[in-house]
Image (cartoon, rainbow, N blue to C red):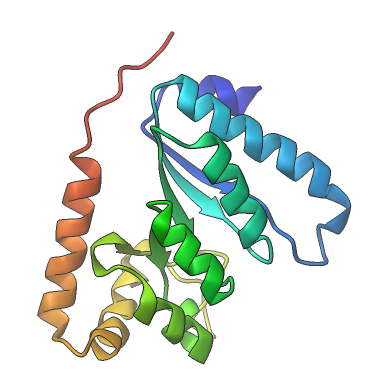
Length: 180
C-alpha cells in the first residue's frame, strides 16, 4: 500500500521485480503479487520509469511486462537471463542497466554485446555489489566504461557520451503529473 501511494509522487520506481533464486523461494507468490500491483499502479498513474529485478525469473518478468506495461519504461537491472529472453526484452522496448559486477562474467559480456547501445545505462547495484573489497557506490558506475568500450570496440569518450545521451533521452520523457 505504501509503495502504491508513494508512486504517485515520483517519476521513478525501483527496484521492483521477481527473484527466482533459491533463497526467497517461499515468497514467489507474494513477490508476483507485489510486482504485478506495482506495474498496474505505474500504468494507472500514466507511466513510470521502473527499475526491474529479474534474477532467475526473466521469463516471468517479461510475461508481466508484456501483459501490463504500455506507458511505463522498464529498465532491466543487471539482466542475466538467457539470450532468448534478452531478445524478447529488446522487442518489448526494455532498457538495461549494467554494473561492474555484471561485467565480471563472460555471460555478462555476451549479454551486453547484444543489448541495444541506445538503451543501456550504467549502475553499480551498490551497496549490495562490491569491488571485492568494499561496497560499490554510485560514482563507481564509471567502472563499467572501459569494459563497455572494449565490448563495443570503441573509446571511453564515446561510451560516456552514449550514456549521457541515453540518460538525457530517458529523462526527457514528458513530466508526469503527480496524483493526489
